[in-house]
Length: 191
Image 1 (spheres, helix red, strand yellow):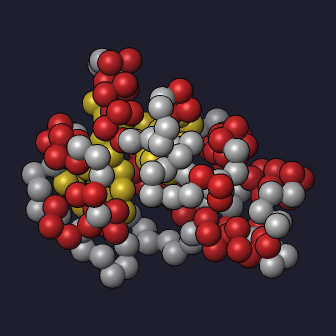
Image 2: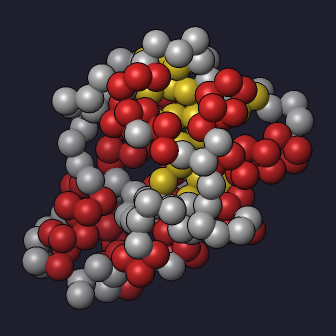
């Protein structure tokens, strides 16, 4: 089975993430898209992250019972910070019949050469790239394993949502109702 791995902090998950995942699951050859919730991205400060169990709950609320979308906790059990190469090795050992594809924006592809063991990743896995305004994918855009997809461009970021909540703005339409209600109920991102 061909599985798309959509890595991220999902702090919080929002409509933009869901539109991309839905597009990849419906308009490409992927059978499922797994939201791989990163407990600690090496490029981000851990202190700014909501606890991983809460981010997992938000992803599960967002995808509900969609059988093409799945929340993955694989990185919760691996050494931190999370390196994609380690996650891929672990997943290939655990799910031998699956073919794993990375999903990333053109902006991330431009900095992909800064990732640990990026050469090994790109030689052994396809990378499905979605457009990001002002980014063409950089030096790896013509690699044989890089495939660009014309997914919708939605300019919403988790940072924008967190900052808006701090400013007491209503962001209910930027995410599914269930996610919005949980964030409100738990008073996440208010301080």
